[in-house]
Length: 144
Image 1: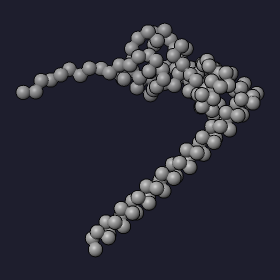
Image 2: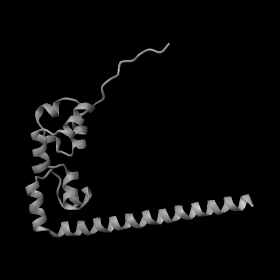
Image 3: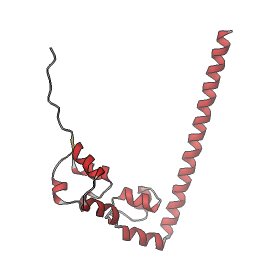
Image 4: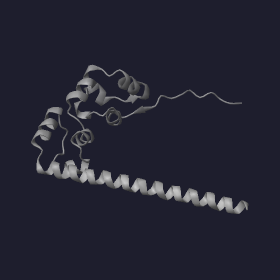
């Protein structure tokens, strides 16, 4: 006989929820920071974000991952450039306008990394295609 288990609600820490929402935890409301967030609550925040979440996403402060993406560099590049804290949208725009030497250098590095990633992916796809063709040829030979 099978027993019926009561379904438990999955929850997550505020830091995890903030990361999934793409916001800086330190800028979220106190009740968000102090509680646990269920999957259902996270889904509700994603589908119909309250005003505080909309404002955070628009104006910041933004977590480093978002800052890096908006500046077109890696998180490591931010650190090399001396950016270790969350930045507001205004601060990000100011950095874009100033376009300091470190930012230009990190964008160049990031572009090289992207090109190398594409090259490696294409190489692996070509090798996989060759393996499949060799396997198909071996299978045809085996049938003869």
